[in-house]
Structure formats: structure tokens, C-alpha cells
Length: 264
Length: 372
Ligand SMILES: Nc1ncnc2c1ncn2[C@@H]1O[C@H](COP(=O)(O)OP(=O)(O)OP(=O)(O)O)[C@@H](O)[C@H]1O
Ligand SMILES: [Mg+2]
Image 1 (cartoon, each protein chain N blue to C red):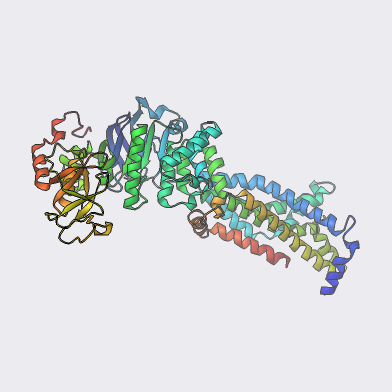
Image 2 (cartoon, helix red, strand yellow):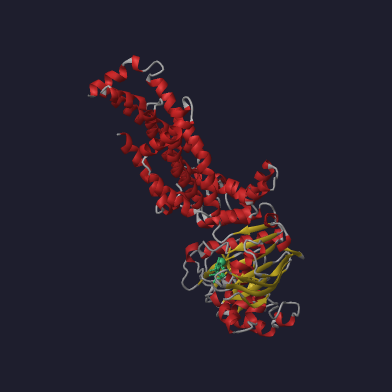
């Protein structure tokens, strides 16, 4: 089994061409990227607005709970059945898959943005308002920079989930690394299936690692305790311990687990 | 000048935090709001910059109704130090201090320079500028909070228990620094505290509030100590008020006695006195020694340091304390440069106190009864 896997992965014929690993990886990243982009456009402004105004908290919490109960594959079938007759060409296969991925990515993104803003030290927010910042300035200059660690953790968890689930797109007849799983299964080519699964996992890990690096540079050292001198004991630690009690954090963590269990 | 006219704040849950409060905070002076926890100090303060909107009544700033001004503009002209510093965790100390000037679109390098100056003025080493708030102690954070509120040089400052998070020694330092700063800047300051000693020390005018947001008394500190209007104020002002009031009474000419002194390193043997004062080469008093017990040349560790030293130009409290604390019972009095001018005994200080008027009674300009 293992040797079959190695043989498959080291066979250069499997890497090139329009159905090779390279092309499939690019497709996979393309589906994931576009879904995440659209999901961010919807979820992050909404999450920020709810965190900033404090209105609509129940919405985030219920959405996060409900989303966990949606079976991705079931949703995909519903979308295909519903949309296939209405669309033409390649988009008939692609759009239903993208919608599933977007739906999947929204809850962790929104929860991260919301929890990040809501967890900002009320004294800092109060001071910002007290020195004459307008609502928008408070959001842009104080709330968002302080929410970045949680916005990032929401984004990373959404990314992992989307990359893992983009495998499903192949079921609906599109490309991506999922093809190796579907096509392999049809001809009982187990090394090909295992390679496909492995490639998805590796891709997810590599992307997550890249995001971790970006996060390191985007988030202020004042929030992570990486500044010079002694480590942060106020900001960082207090914030995270307070937040770990919220149901939303549980959501972010558990969705990461979901990812693992889906493609292993 | 900031003026409250019949200001009431009733929260939606029915709590009346401030009840028809009228008061005036004169320009260039420190007005302290003091009272027990929950008496409405913070609420009153936050109504000035409209972080809280009054239910009724008006607050005017130099005659202009604050309710008619644009909130963000009103606030940009008022420095606000909140109860727990409220620094921005994601910004360095320097960027925290520069917030308002940058908000007002002031020049970047100019702001930077000014912010560095301010940090120094509140007693922070310039090396702290690059740190983040989480890397500072509570007292350092509060200093940054004060510097941040001062950064755009607003004429009015609102300060909500700015020195509460520190131990008594550091608090005293911060208070002294603050008074020096105010001596230079002359801002119109409303200062909230629940510590009556802090109120007495810092206030040009002290406003005592009762729970329910009622004004109990508004007066100059010395007057408040001498004439509390009712039992509540008397209780709140606390014990030792007769003694503490001496802090506000200048020392009259005291009958100073010349004191026999010896220099450090000399021998006290053979001096015919129970205690003798040791001075340095500039005639600054160092401490007392007992000639009968001190053998050989006087060394630092032989000095009795229990006595305090009072300035001749300082308040009477210092002179009395100096006499009471001195092992020889002779209080050491120095001039403004710290050089010895003579000693005084407690009964002589007391005589001076008895002969002095209670000055605040003689001064009709000091605020008296509540303005409500
Ligand atoms: N948003 C609010 N809703 C209801 N009641 C409030 C609100 N804010 C304050 N209060 C109440 O108003 C009263 C005055 O509160 P305030 O914060 O002004 O007290 P304070 O004098 O500053 O006390 P402390 O010294 O403890 O800071 C208190 O009884 C408080 O419980
Ligand atoms: Mg308060």
C-alpha cells in the first residue's frame, strides 16, 4: 500500500498534463481562493458590524451552531439539483461547489471577526471614543487591529475547511485534487486515491503555515507578547483566557478538528 | 470655565446617578470631585464630554452649551484620562501618546517630538517609547494615559482616578509631578478621586458628592477641613482634620533658637548638650547624635534620623511635625536652599498657631455654602 503510494507519487507522468498533480493543485487552490474571497466579503464586514454595534449576537451564535449541522455533501447535491438546469457550460458544475464552500467558510470567518471585536478591552474602546474618534475610526484604528489575532484564527480555520472540502467539487464533476479520489475509486486505483488524500492534507498544511507567517507580521507585537523586553502578561494572556470561554471559540477549534476527520 | 446647571442623570433602569447638580469649575484650576464609591463621580465627569448624556440640565464650556456641539469635536478639545488608563494594546507607548495629534492631522515628526517630551515630563524614560502597554507596570501605564490626554495640548482635562493603580509612595510621586506640570500648564482640570487626602492635596477647589449624586459641599480644601457643612462631610473628611488643616497655613515668624552644630567626622565628645545636630559643609542638617554615647569621629551610621526637617517658608504642619519628631524635641528649620536657620520647640509652634487667625474664616472670597 505504502509502496504503491510512493510509486504513484514519484511517477512523473502523474504530475504533468492537464490532469496531473500540478494542474489539479492549481485548480484546487483556485476554487478555494475564490470561495474564501467571496466568503470574506460577506462574513467579515458582518462580523465586524455585529461586534462593533453589539447588535445581532444571537445571529452569529445560532449561525455557527447551525452551520456545523449542515452535511457538505448533502448540500452539494441539493445545489447541483437546483442549479444545474439553470446554468450552462462549466459553470453548471462549478457554481454549486463554490456555493457549498462559501457557505462552509462563512461561520468561522464571521465568528472570528465578531469575537475579535467584541473581545477588545472595553477601556481601550472607551478611551478611543473619549478622545473624539468617530465610530468608523474606533473600528478601523482600535477594534480591527486588536481583533486581528481572532480574525486570523477564523480565516485559517475557514481555509483549512475549504481546502479539505474542495475535494468534494470533484463529485459534482469539476477538477481539483478531488479528481484523484473520485477517478481512483472508479477504477479501484487505491494508490491514486491515497495520493490524492495525502496531497490535499499537505496542501492544507502548507497554506496554513504560510498564513501563520503572514499573521506573525500582520499582528501587532503588543498583542502577542513578541515586543522587546518582558513578555505581555496583560494584553495577550488576559484576552485569550477570557475568550476561550465563549461558545464561538469552541466553534473555531472544533471546526479545525472537523477538517482533520474529513480527509483522513 | 465648566459649569453644571441643574444636571440630572437617570439611567434607564431608574438609578439616579447624579441629581440636579450645579457647580462651576474655574479656568486654569483643579476642581476635584470626591465622594464614596457609586456617588456619581464618573457619571458627572463623563457628562462633560458627553460620553454620557444628561437626562436634564445643561453643561457649558466657556459659556457654550456642550449639548449643541458636535460630539467628536467637543471630545477632541478635551483631554480624557479614563479610570483604568485604557491604552491601546496594539500600539507602542509613543503611538499611544500621539493618537490625538495624529487624529487632528498634525505633522508627524512634530508630534513625535512632542510626544517624547511629554513622556519625559510625566516621568517616563524615553526608552519606554517603543514598548507596548502590556510591557508596562500599572503606574507606568497611568503615566502614559496622562501623557496621551495632554498630547494635543487641550485646555480642559478630565481625569478619572488617574493615580489609583499604584502604591502610596508612587502615588505621591505622581501627584507631585502632576502639580508641577499643572503649575506650568495651567489647564482647567476636573479630577475625580475617592481618596480625600488626594483631593485635599491636589484641589484648588474640592467638591464632595453624596451617594445619589447630591452635592454635599464645594469649597477650597482648607475651608472644607475647617468647616464641613454636615456630618456626612465631616465623617468623609475624616479624623485629624485640625492637624491636616495646618498644611494650608503658612508658617508665621517663629522664635528660632540658634543650634549648636558639629561637622561630620568631628568628635562630639565633651559637647555639653543632650543632643547635638550634625551638618555637612553647606550647613545642611544631617541628623542628631548624643554626645554621651557617640565615641570618636561622627560617622553616618551613628546619626539619629527620626526627625523631620521643615522649611521656614512652608506650612505650619511641617514646623510642628519637625518639633514633634525630633529626638531632641527641637524642630529643625531650614531655608529654601536646605541650610539650617535654627530650631523651634513644639509649644512655640503651638503658640504661633493660637495667635494666628484661621485665615479661611477671614477670607470672604473662598467658596462657602453649596451652590445648589
Ligand atoms: N450604565 C449604567 N446603568 C445603570 N446604572 C449605572 C450605570 N452607570 C453607573 N450607574 C450607577 O450610577 C451610580 C454612579 O456611578 P458612577 O460610576 O458615577 O460612580 P463613581 O462615583 O464613579 O464610583 P467609583 O468611585 O466606584 O468609580 C452607581 O450607583 C452606578 O451603579
Ligand atoms: Mg468611577
